[in-house]
Every structure is written in C-alpha cells, then in structure tokens.
Image 1 (cartoon, rainbow, N blue to C red):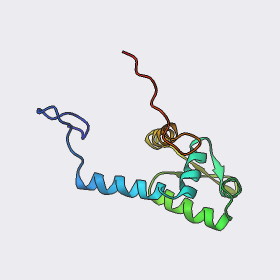
Image 2: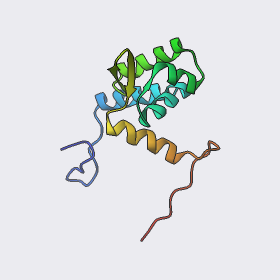
Image 3: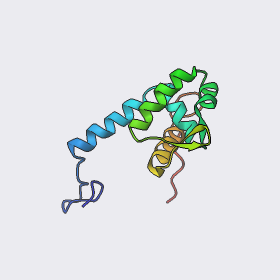
Image 4: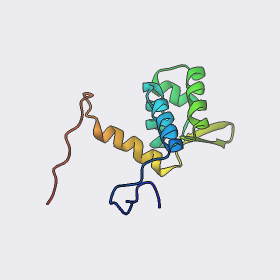
Length: 119
C-alpha cells in the first residue's frame, strides 16, 4: 500500500519519518529564492551555469554552489554537452512541484485564487 492509498479505515496512510525528513529537506532547499529561481528556469529547458547565473543575477561561483546542492538532493541533473555542463530536471515530480508552486502564487506574491469548481 503506498502512502496515498487509503487504509481500510478510509484514511490515507501517514508518511513515514523518512518521507517526512526527505520532504522537509526538499522544501528547505527550495526555500531559497535563488535556488527556487534556478530550478524554475531549469524546468523550462537545459541551461549552463553561466546562463543561469546571468538570468538569476548572481555570480557563476554562487550559481555553481546552489546547483551543487540541488544536484546532491536529486532535484536537478547535469549532462555534458561538449565543454559545457547543462543542467536539467528529469524528474516529472519535480516539474509538477515547481509548476504547482507558481500556479498557487499570483505574480504579486499573494495566493492565487482557486480555479472555479465544476459540479
């Protein structure tokens, strides 16, 4: 039975301590506006560190440090393209998570209204 599957009582199975720790660690990594911006960009296509640094407005060294943390956490991957290292998001769960974050937040930073329910 997976964590989201209901138990015989009808309640979903609660997450394990390991799942809670891992989820918390993921959200902690994404709590940095710079790292969240980097992941958002990378969900929209492969980028090299120089381009990412320029788009986010940080130095290449700072971008490299953030990208290293994101790679270690498994949120992004890196692939060699000749002399360049291109960063991508291969995990559809990460792509969905990032999309959901920005679907939930309006451009002014407030919570976006929920879409109308259809009955």
